[in-house]
Length: 290
Ligand code: GUN
Image (cartoon, rainbow, N blue to C red):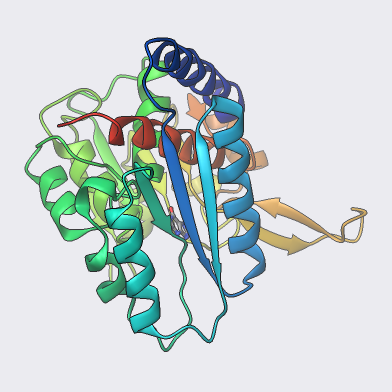
């Protein structure tokens, strides 16, 4: 078994970006600038956004954090987005999700200028991705592809099973793994809550991508010997043996599954850091014209 080390690979990517930023600055260009909009005080969102800002510092990007109270109205949030759309200093920005319930997420995403939408959530970028046109690919799928590429994993003609059909992970990765490219050229099965024969389908996967949000749901008997396992899940489960009182686990029963497969991502340290690195890649891309 080979561990797909997202921590190490994401460091390589950040080093490459840092190098490119140095060259940009040396040639008289401005530093890429990522802005992040954070609404309210969701603990996980604060952690994620702070990590993104730290990554910007490491690679030499400028960054700004726009904090808004959870009482902000939809109109006020859209006004802020318009400002960022028009601000030439800002190359790309994200609106951290989830948003408070009184705000329509779809409307907010559609207010973002597609050319600054480094999350790749705007319908224009989703369409570009589906049509294989240049555009922003969402960070988690993009990070997974990068991991597959950098470990030279064969994808041509393989059966790729994706578990979960979210707009952020499952749907886009199922499109990307089917396209005529490397990584890609897979026969893709997208499974979800209404799928029948779920276990049999999982067991037939050469590449199993799990983005379900159910800790350790995928058991040893559900995976094929020699499969490639990419685990997007990240859940805190109570663990009294830890000082923090919890441990972080993925959607795959890692300890039991690991010796049966050819490649597997650890949790933490697999897909998570790759997602963050892919956002930095998208921000760098935002400084260029398609
Ligand atoms: N919430 C969870 N994942 C993401 C992400 O990739 N981007 C944004 N904006 N919010 C998220």
